[in-house]
Image (cartoon, rainbow, N blue to C red; front, side):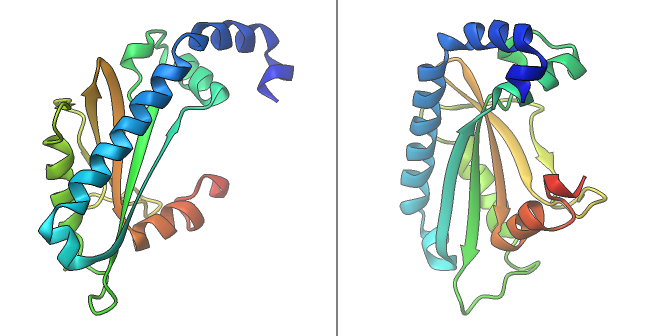
Length: 174
């Protein structure tokens, strides 16, 4: 619909992003690979999780345009979630997911901030686990830089992910 409703803005932003698309994809893939490798080799992760899902995306054109318009931000380098990665930790069956399992999200945050070749971004940590949003959304958000590109990383448990995707915190709900 963006293309039909705002054809000039669509074309302008699309042309602007054309030269970056492959870079964004490479950065996303490198970030996912680095996080997966780090988590596969971490004893605490291996001991307490049955699986860890790491996925990523690049921001869609309309979402990017809308954010740039509402935040009055035209510099692409200042938009933290152009490239985003999500880490979802799933407990082993014998471990119940609850307050005693949440510490693992903070452990993943530590590991992400210490990924080889990545630089954590100061003042870009948001703790929605300790301080959930009013709609029940819980997650840790941080940003790291790789090759000059900022990447947003979200970290949550499987239960938090269910609420974010399908519960009151999901985008369709508002």
